[in-house]
Image (tube, rainbow, N blue to C red; front, top):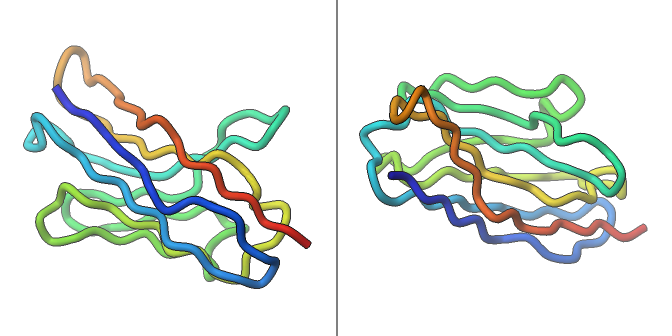
Length: 118
């Protein structure tokens, strides 16, 4: 019912910035939470930030202050602004949506690669 498409990844030097975008389509009204996760090579996928339909945000402690999650008021687009990037931020970043469809189905995007060079 819901599909997610991420964009905005790429190569950036340490100290630089990127903004990731996630566009949701399909049964938008079924979404109650959206967020960003990341997975570095050889590591488990981890939470970066989440945002509710009402705009409440939550961040992983180490990224709070550097990263900002936000959404367009149409609700179907979520952004992740990343500042002061370092090589440890290198990962595939995934958009996630939690829905009320089919036993509270979670939907994942295809991922967008962020590479931070030193």
